[in-house]
Image 1 (cartoon, rainbow, N blue to C red):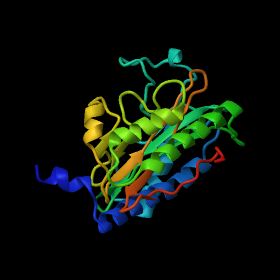
Image 2 (image 1 turned 180 degrees about the vertical axis):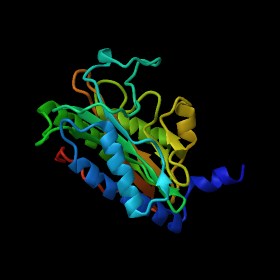
Image 3 (image 1 turned 90 degrees about the horizontal axis):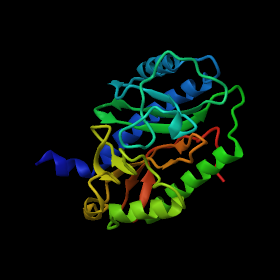
Image 4 (image 1 turned 30 degrees about the vertical axis):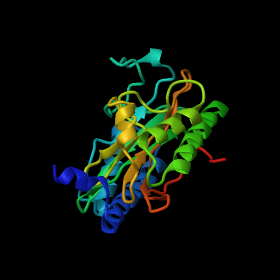
Length: 256
């Protein structure tokens, strides 16, 4: 009753702590991505990541690192009870192959505050997205731009969700059914506010953006037959808009 409302908005010091944790996470991911090539195992990536965050001074790992090889089609499985894309699945000592599309998700804790990192990578000595894969990224970027264009105090979570859906165009809504378009981060890796959950539109409509709110935006663009694109960026709501708390490139995808 007391702590829940207190955690919805962050102080300037708390925002600095989240930014510091995220930057440490992103620094570790630079080393991990550099070793991404055919023959490397998911567990090798995990070992590299955990070793690097210890070297950088993290307090502890927040979630089991995810390096999920995405199927090209839902029909390829694994199967889910909700009929949507299966994510996340556990990492395993399986070798990666040329052209594998990897959805990445990691989180660490530093000084009591969490980070949240998400990107889509392609396995290869010289990985380059196909035109269709690049088009998925472009649509993901359009969803992010539409949401951020509205992100300011007084705007509801429902308005942000509807902007994301409109920007995605034809097809499913641009996030995974059993997750969300956005969630908060702070002392926990996922906390309020949460937008796009199965709590429904009335719940989202009651969530009004306030200065100090933190949003981890994680749209997903999925076209059956092309494995999809997913990434996460963290922003904080300011007095008149938003500011970024994450800053990591989208390689090998290129922003238009």
